[in-house]
Image (cartoon, rainbow, N blue to C red; front, top):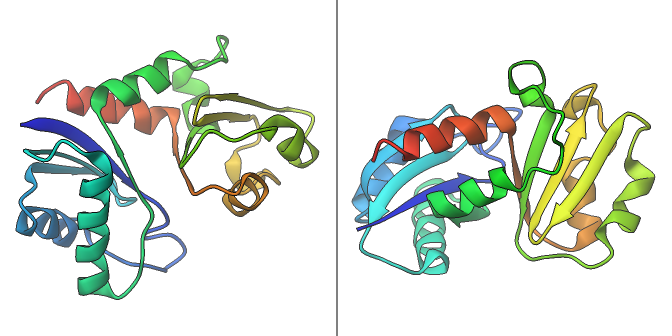
Amino acid sequence: MAHYISLLRGINVAGKKLIKMADLRALYQQIALNNVQSYIQSGNLLFTTAEDEPANIAKQINRAIFAQYKFDVPIFILTPERLQSARNNLPFNDIDVAKDGSKVLLCFLSSAPNHAIELLSPYLKSNERIAIIDDVLYLHCQDGFGRSKLSHSNIEKKLQVSATSRNLRTVDKLLTMASTY
């Protein structure tokens, strides 16, 4: 059985695309995903499955959510090793996770973009930092992501990708949970 982490984009945000985590865990189990665990209400789930192709798993989950809730949800499927690699590549070496872990985002992109820094730089405040390594965009917003002009819609529109982000604390928690499988 392979271990995976699914990151769902845009559920339970601002009262839209509402799914209770207990219901989502049950839905995963109905489609033969096993040992399902969730973390907070934003669509972070860990599970095991015999399926070894992340794209197939994402399609299966997306179809099940659409059948149940009548809306599409972009779904990113990562192995624990892939999430650990993204965490290890964090380019900001001066981050105090306890203090600033919620102000650093790892934004997972559907593909590695070209010219991303120059496309997104006009949206950065003077106290924000950005880096891109492969298909992960790293963003440090000292004032918090909610105050940044670099919103998900700007990232997706300018880079022509789908994206979902998790803050550093959430990434660390998911890695801790994955290590107990």
